[in-house]
Length: 110
Image 1 (cartoon, rainbow, N blue to C red):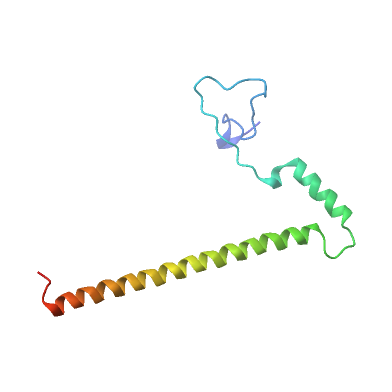
Image 2: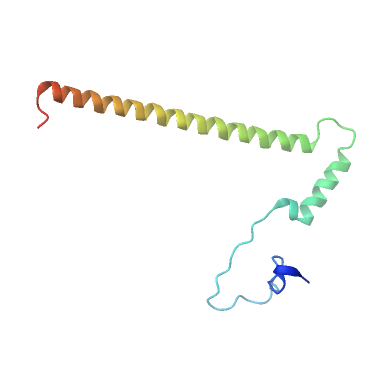
């Protein structure tokens, strides 16, 4: 049971039995899945940890390499998009001011 300021509030882990349908018209919200909160995931990682004991390159390091590689790829793509956006804005600004100055020099601005 909860105590303090959260007393009386429903628990985040309180669930309706699978056989009980949602009330008519009630919105069903999704649960944010966190792998670290899953008992199955923790058991899987513990089994991998003990099976990889004594080996230098193991599943944990492989998973970390994949995560950091993906992070690097996302950063590179984000940098390329930002660079392309910056170049496009500079080119459009240059085209605009070249056109405006050409109109002003020709006296066709009115």
